[in-house]
Image (cartoon, rainbow, N blue to C red; front, side, top):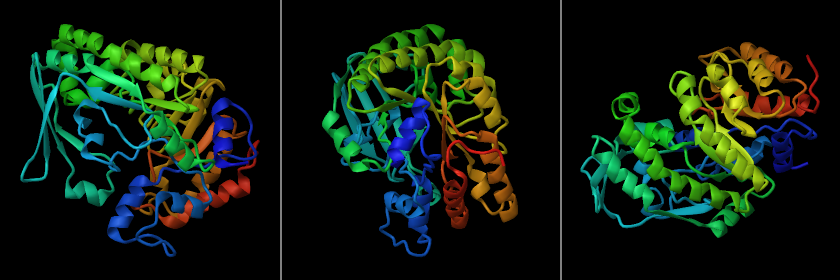
Length: 402
């Protein structure tokens, strides 16, 4: 059985021949390539695909390679949460907007958007420190919404975005991945307009003040952004993809339960209905503390909670999550990234943790093993190899309690 078949079976609640193991390697790869510290046998041009093949694990093709751009246009609208990357199944084009781009002496990129109703701008950076750490996406230093008047401008931009299929772009990606993994069609990071506001359009701390101080502007922005989302999900639902990713970065202290219930849950349910009607699997990126969100995630209609963290990184246990999901949602993740770090635990403690993890997730249905959120730059290579070995040794489904 191929890695793709195992992932699809797990995502659909069916049994495979063994537990899929699909670690996300891009940050580890970026940092170690830059440092020249790949493991023996791997050279400076080694790709993440070759690393995964060497480990005998599935290729993680869930999160896009945000820095792997073909032209600047692919990522120039990062400040709006919009990308046009290789492998995307759609293309979002700004209409009736004059975009002006300039580079600052420190390397930062300033993007100005001039519309008939006014202008906004943002500042995007990618520092040397970020490069050294293996960061896989640029940072928004200044957001497009800085004052109440900016809502109308950003709303105008989104009202005039045209979303069209880019299925040949996606098919090339799908063909490249083949049976080595699951080529997930990526949508947007914000599952809803309000989450997009939080993640991309205003400063993360300022967001809570905006919600309280400017409710009319926020509500108007929701109405302005809704047609963009509807176009996007329709295009993804009609795409050749078997699985679609929408929404990311939930946490019960940031996207706290009342906020999630009002501003994110109904949208996840809405997208689930559209995607399921077209036979798509619905992934969303649950990389934070999920304990307070469990009943809401369970009601969301998603098929796969991807990038799930586990103790000691978070409070929420895999047992609690499995119980809350009731066999309806597949967990993708489970290996906390800290267990791969020498300073976090000894080799014996690492072995004990992994044995306990296999016991906890038995019998192994609706589970795709992964490292959450990703394999860290300083991960001990032999521990990653050891997890792959343990999957070979103990990962036959159904797992036994050991």
